[in-house]
Image (cartoon, rainbow, N blue to C red; front, top):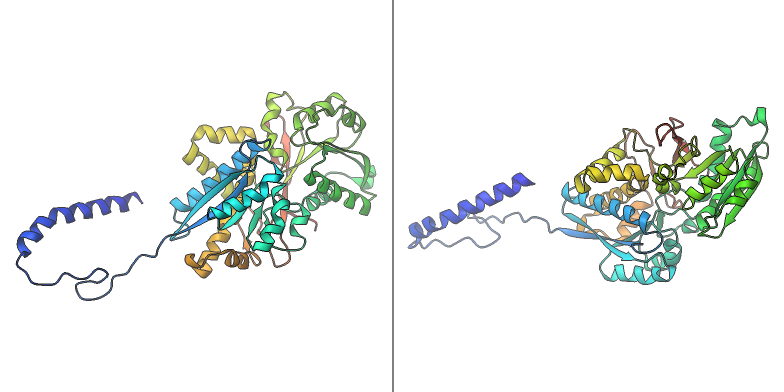
Length: 427
């Protein structure tokens, strides 16, 4: 790009320098000047295709309770758009992001959707768990593609214009227990493992619980309930649930309340293995400051991405974008903070590759919600050899089909791979 600019400037300078000579030598010449759009030989010039701007409407939270995590997701989205633009990965297309601050208030979801569409958004994206449910009927009626990072079951039933960039939460819960039964707990020798859950009563964790219950009911020889506590969102006192679950073998813990939850469970004398998901990795950076690294040791985390300490295409891209666009200090800060940027980039990657595939199929000027939808209902993306492919079909609206398992290592204050393989989600 820099070389092109230099050549352009030089050519322009030469042209300016030549103008007086051309005027002096050709003042009395009667030859006609070639018309614009043609050469001296009368042949039409080749015009460059007009650049098309594709705008992503992002419903986010910049000033509400989810703003800390959403700001990192927003950064990953805009970084990927900038990367695609600078690398010209979709020729003749400029990608832009239009943001709306919902303040994590459901009453602002529909006005936010309408506003970004009025401002020219071609389709909609959101990392918030509530927004997709609120505007689902709107996007289905308007036939506007909505990419959701939240995997609530209702978003895909029936299959419509919402495409989820993850697995269904209930499938995550069921798959967690299946992996434990096959890889971590010897139920044939020890009998069923005692399972506990303490978390906020959010839609996501209700669905994780639904997956747990489905699996426990189907496999009573593998698991039995020690207790389940879903408390009102905003609860940070976990003393009672922690005491009730101290003898459990496995305990699913709060996400936003991870610090008081781990602290209460440790204080109660609990020694079970803690269970977490992609939602929890947003809060890992708090553990060291809270002095809970030892209490968190050997915690299992089930996610659909690679981690910072691995050599994989999207890990390396995440590091590159953070350094190039925000500096080495921001990369270090994100690695210490947790995995929001890393996880988000793994999901967002599919959005941009779907845009690219659509443009390649129909041309930039013909990009629309309908042509994007037509791509998505038969779309598969494979980020590289360190990954498993994922995508959507005419009947499946949940993108990620495989997960990996990591374990927190207190000695390294970081997550390490607990299993070298990808595993399919139970569906």
